[in-house]
Length: 276
Length: 88
Image (tube, rainbow over all chains, first blue to last red; front, side, top):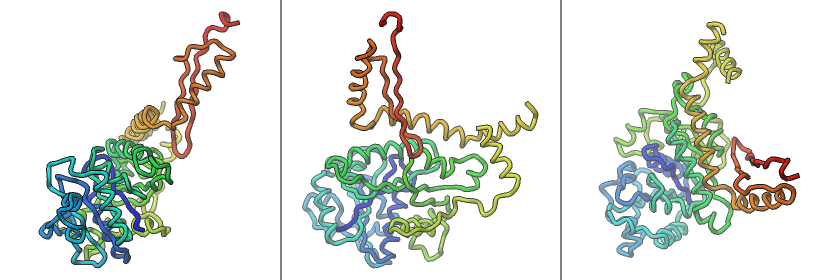
């Protein structure tokens, strides 16, 4: 039975689709048969990030409505085995996505795949709700920035109360925090919330910290998930580490601590703590 | 306060610290009004009953809040008792 993983955040523009593509490709790279599903009905973009936008014939809504079967709608990735994309529809009909329809498609996917990655739209409307409703695992993508952290907390509340697992009294969704666009330099300057600050506020386990990286834009320009780029980038490596942790491996976090701490910064730090 | 203290104080109020403080306040507030555990209203009612056995209290004067900080929760109970002279 496949594991259903939702990539969610509440806030838009924090890197959900980038993360969905990177994690899905990372899992496929590790040999797991993986499907990545775009839940952003009306604003499909996962196809573009995955580089298969010109191969979309049928979509998620076509399958729900019975206008195509799942095999026709799934796009097989050309670069790597075991990776499939189910694109969102560009329809403006918001009611096209139904709970029963999503349930049916996910159940069919579960018989074929090891992992199903649900790329949630921003917000807390129907698409976002259905993307997380059937999930076993949630990856909450958060930027080190106030509005993103607040929205992530809101999302955690919804995961704990409005999901199938919550409603049926099953074991709760396993939550993971993925911190993206992290800049250690800015954290050290006191200009950005640090990983410990955010963990203290959100209080869920840390899956990974993705450093702010120019490679993310290069990857999306080319339509290649960052974990499939030929060059090994810092962000790509951080995503691959996160995939390994998702699979239960114990890997130390990179990009969260400075290489070496100078005497001066240590002095300032201790002073800060005593004053606070 | 020495000049050094002044400099260090300025440093301690980094924008990241301000962000953290603001977030802690708003997030804990939103949590308390949002999805407290299901038993919270019942707990409140029973607490009122128990206290009412001994003191004549106004229901609105009992505040029960659950706050989560780090990996522990704090149950905050705030009861305003009426003037003891009138009840005795």
